[in-house]
Length: 383
Image (cartoon, rainbow, N blue to C red; front, side, top):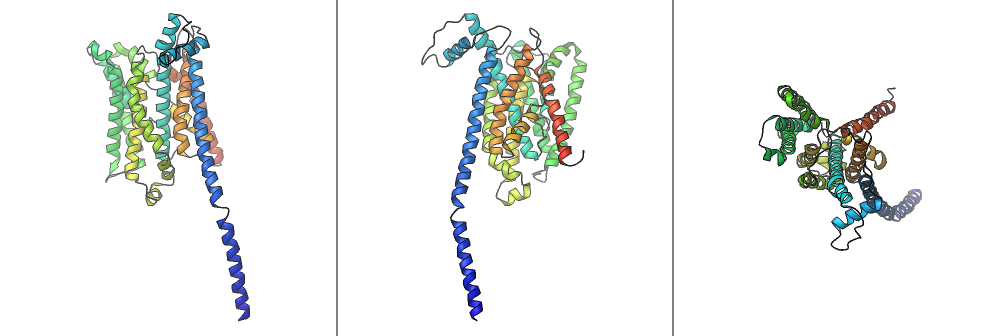
């Protein structure tokens, strides 16, 4: 009996020690870890925004016509904050026109397009739980191509073209294609990822066939059609194209940033996410809408530009890991940086002529894509 009492006392003593150890250190480290993670996330975003601002200033200044950095800064300041405090306008009217009416609208458009494509790619990669997913995977590209080529090929009044018929045609084509894909993938009220991918491939192939047919029947407009399909920003729309796509980009970006935590949960699988209280049935169409708005708005004003939605999120993921609370906003910012640098290179590498920016992104993206495949083979022990 005494032996049993000794064992009971020893058990109680050890239990008390274990309880003290678990009560004392756990709460504070967890709180500091969460705080550190939050600070790290905010710090990365602020750093990325600073890099974006430096990139914009550098790309606006850099060009075939030399404009000093001081003049560039004063021009931008006076056009934006000049009513509050104006800087001395010791620059020429020609420099003002080059910076504010030519280079800056184009650069703003490249940043918006890069942000849209990279953000869309990050969303689709999280939705499909595959880091090699692409924003064009569900028919966005081919749908936009059908709409744009149809607007180019079909004779329309001049005022309709001036109102942005090609851009609106591409946007409507992209959104219509994704809507068809989504409805085809709906089986019994549910959207399965495999069905979404297969429907995207089918509609994409159909869109490619329609685009080829329209091109063949209207070969007199071949130059305009291929000019759009190659992708680029050699437009004279000024700030109009930027203001036209900003509302769609804003809605898509807001949904994307707010969905970071939900995408983290979704990475564990749809069934487990549902058991944890996530409304997967509502989340998936919401993510598809956000990604479609981002990609369709981008493609409508730039044409088909590949690899941005694949490469940028993957590069960001190598730094931040799989946390979509960091991955989504950083992909959007660095997508804008990547596209701005690519377009600056495209317009200066063979100046005064200009390369389609899709060639630059393909030269950057293809080797990186090959590297990803080789790396996955080595990780899986297949090489």
